[in-house]
Image (cartoon, rainbow, N blue to C red; front, side):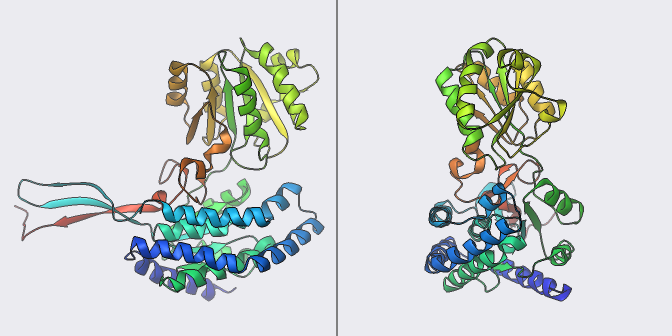
Length: 417
């Protein structure tokens, strides 16, 4: 794809974004419904094409985690369609009056929510991002430019073309949803230069991709680099609940950004809970790497190094550290964590409140699995990623997070004195 083609896409998206900003909630919800119907109609082709791309990825020596992220089966596809339909059921994020007043002279001033404009989504492996991103952007009235990885180009193109057809049937602008259809880095490089037309970039993938995007553009980027997620088991935690939460946080899907990577255990509880956890982890083929105190209780495990506390494994490996109370747990999380998702298991409301007030993370969970922080379980429907930034969005990025605001003022010939 040459430069002019990327520029054409960006220009077309800018025009579409202006048209989208004045669409009604009913029209955008209809578009989401028709997008899901259109995807359902090409289900057989999607599954066939995706199976071919998965086979090629395996033949090319891609990792098992990568090919799993790439795979769409019947269950995954139905989940993708469900997320589109759920986001349609969300309240309209646009045209909300965020605040307002009438001044003593009768000047009406208010602040209302509006779309960001044009969103560029650059991602690897996961074709579900294609449908999630388009759904969230249509709900929030933003035009979207999709750029998936070359390993899933055919799957992503087929998904996108179906959604374009559905959105157009509902009367949305022709270029509301677009995809860059050529593999290679050149087109991405040109998209990064399109600050005249593109308002926000959202990279989804490994740390290398996100860093490359953030450092290579003047366009604002919503991002997270790492998901070094923690659970702290306090001394009063219920043992059965603690084991269930830790196992679910780590084992439910090891290759995702909100999977547990470091477990912190209160020293007063370690001898009781660690053997129970080791048995459960052995059943799930998880390698444990522990601090020296942990090794005294579980002598067969590896000794954790300083690097382990800094590592997002995305693999069947977990680091374990015994800490001297909640203050040490909080200090460890704030020092080594990535600000993504961290949690505590405790029966003490006072301890839970202290933890959530002092842990500086986008999501803080009390007696709940870290795997719940993806956005769907927060009631957001689809999301386009998770942000560890503090500006513009933080945590799961759903329709509300893809809006900004404008000030609107109604007067009656008002002049400034």
